[in-house]
Length: 612
Image (cartoon, rainbow, N blue to C red):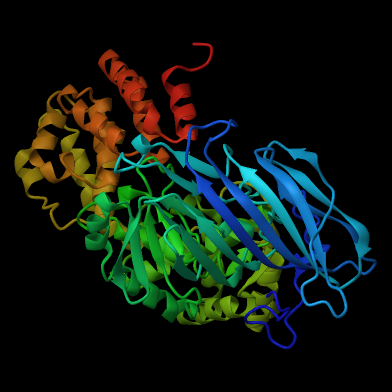
């Protein structure tokens, strides 16, 4: 948008949005005073020891912001979101001058102001106030080392164990610790970046284009406007493989074959189904970056380059459909975005609904409709309720496509969405469905507690009932092996096995000897490589003090550091026998160096609580 053209998808006159007036209490910036037309980052990555000293690891360089003043009276100051870990050493201002092609950048003063525990304000003072509609460019020279937005990994925290790794995590308010910005989802803009890395390293970013420039530099451009939290960078020993006409997998060399095998052809099928339902996929490419094992999250939907846990490499494609959730964010969250984090359900509620629509079309019954936390996801339940009011799935699918088209590249509030919903379905507006007693839209959005409407989960009953009945057989004092062996679990999908194991865990501890027999009867479960099954088998083993399988818990914790899997196992160990508690302490001592710092802190609290 550096040339001042309208946002993609904008018509001659787009509808005014409630979000245009919305505040964002999580931002210290004056983002309403300026339009951010473009951001350019020029950074050099340096790996070294942690700390502030010479030669320490950090990102150094410049951020260049192209801006237009929106204040009718002009503005004397630019306020950006920043963080104490981000050290700005110089600021310069370039202003339009009649007849001058590229006016020189002149140094200007700047200062910081405290804001919150997650950031501060960076204030850049203008020698003379800028005029309404004036174009200007602010250049900031800075360095960032240790901080919440930039995660540095030692070689032992990676899969290859040979080279360090660095990545950024922006959601929700952490990119202010990566570069000075308007760190609010209300503002979208295009960006470019030039990243210099040491010999033998590769940089990747959430960008439309990736181009190598010389031996150590990589140039990126994002051709669509995105909010700050979706700008992401990773640098490491990375290679890639094509897995579809518009998708690649990226990983460390020791993981790339597994990633290619698991996801070859899969992503294109998911994308094509999403396009049929919700409209064009506008991001060009959809790449997956398999992160080092210490990555504490399941996935992060950075456009063009989703970061995912290597736990998704199950070896049998049994977790490939987890990617559908991240792909669904391509329309809901990345294309149509919540304008502030108080409206986060607009990102996640619609994404959960979209994920289940794609899954239902591809697999018949969606796993998450039969089992998971569906009833607890209020955003998903609200979208399901609105579909229920329409009463026709095809009509509601058409509405979702129109909704994405209407608000693409924009950030909105619930009121913007609901106004559009009632305009699209005038017969529902006429019926005043927004104020049906007990189901008022306002109640959905502003009253805490259980959703007033739960989607019908009965299609899953026939799939889950056998799992429930089988678990009951395994909980018996006297095992009826004839009845047990009559139930064939080999055709079961992962979600059915997960449901079965959860039921076993609920009934644990089982009568003596039952868990040993369970493991022997189903080696596909007790020796699984699927992370969801390994977690639950580990929990069952610990709850039943089945010590001959404790080594499997230890191995799993040595192989990955995802928070979702790591914390429950430490809770189970510390809630178990003395042998299990000793296992927890020994495993933590030997794996702490390969875990993310946040996970280390959480495990520390479990293994050795303060005051204990």
